[in-house]
Length: 179
Ligand code: FES
Image (cartoon, rainbow, N blue to C red; front, side):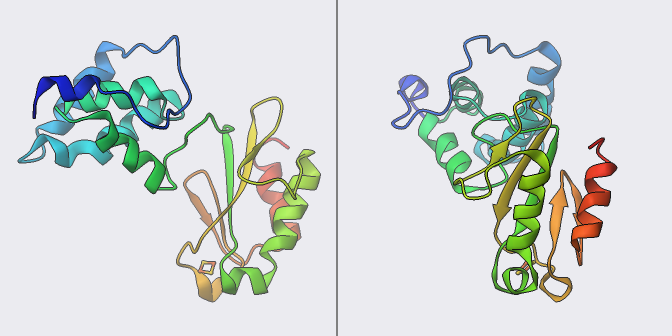
């Protein structure tokens, strides 16, 4: 792809990260990941995961950097960030609580569960989108089906999956996270 494409502006910018700097280890990890695929573009998701693991979210600058490394236009990376809900467009808390609200879980008490977490953490249960506590420790958000419909309500705390989450179990999850 033409090199000029790598500097095209992103049409709907993510958060800017003025202090963005890619450490040598992360750049090396990106280059190593690229070697796993027959074409560079196929490494896009893996690079996004690596950058999110490092920075906690995907910024405008990260999109431009990754696109340049893969010889793509920023839009090719940006569209992945906005399509896949696992990519964070802004920083999330160290403890990220994702509560499924799709039908089985909604019927099983997902909304009560979400409200319970929000109340305990001083967040607004009615607000739209992910809510993060002022100290940056906790983020609560609704997500769609986590593929555990038979044991609703289900949720994730970072990468840990929890099934049949009662309010009591919710308190235990928070307690295990220092709340
Ligand atoms: S509906 Fe919640 S896991 Fe499927």
